[in-house]
Amino acid sequence: MNEPLLDVRHLRKSYGTTTVVDDVSFAIAPGECLGVIGPNGAGKTTTIRMALGLSVPDSGEIHYFASPAGAPDTTLHMPRDALAIKAQLGVVSQFDTLDPDFSCAENLLVYGRYFGMKSAAIRARTPELLEFAALTHKADAKPGELSGGMKRRLSLARALVNDPRLLLLDEPTTGLDPQARHLMWERLQVLLQQGKSILLTTHFMDEAERLCSRLLVLDHGKKIAEGRPRDLIAEHLEPDVVEVYGVGALALADSPLKAHAARVEVSGETLFFYTDSARPLLAALDAYPQLRTLHRPANLEDLFLKLTGRQIRQDG
Image 1 (cartoon, helix red, strand yellow):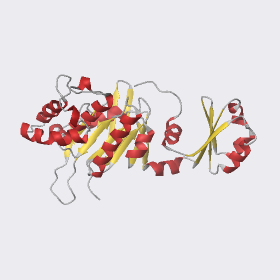
Image 2: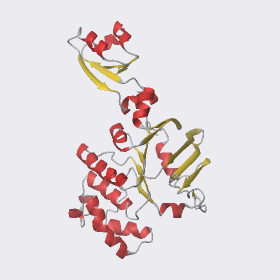
Image 3: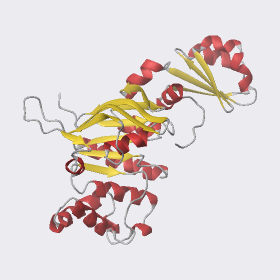
Image 4: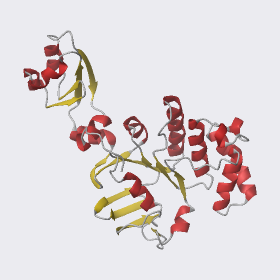
């Protein structure tokens, strides 16, 4: 097995009396996309900040780019080796950090200089990066002239200017419309096919299921689950979900229909029946023609809600 590009061990971080990251460990293998999901305040962004050296952990270790077994030890440690680590990372933060005074091409040039790259080398890479971001026709445009999706793709292109081994992406598609999100996903899938590794935080379960080979689920600062998306769904959920909504639907929450489901949950005006076999339940629901039903397989959103609850969380 290849040595991990990022190996986080027993990470802890508190602010005052509030523990925001509590004994979190994980690793990312070469060519892997690890998704970090959890409600607001779960500790996702704090974990990313510690991995980037922007926040110092109270305890724990963060190792990068471990050397193969038997080779001289070249493992880098954050924050001790922060500069050497960042030279091999690409970062896309939640918020736009593009320079509004520079064109798209100039943003790439200036950012590349932060890594000590020669201007000629950056300019040689610029056409390829702009083409990757579908922004060739916007090379001379400034960020203020770009749509939200274009800005996110430019941020991704900028993160690639130093040809990083590992990308850290903190909610990279937040605020984008569906078309822009799908185009961003396509670009990230290309990077994975090229052998890049990605650490991705996201609130979009379809994004996590589409991109991530493994998931880390955080809640209240703790790791509560980790594994491949489909394996986690099979471990924690019944295979079938029947959603029931319409006038009188909620009255069925404590009806004999419960006998056909392992679990029944209420969210808003919808009943969710989680079952190992939907056929008997669907047959019983024929007696309620005024109700609408949706039969579907269990998905990551069901997993997320089961593990972290349906209550709204405040930002934190």
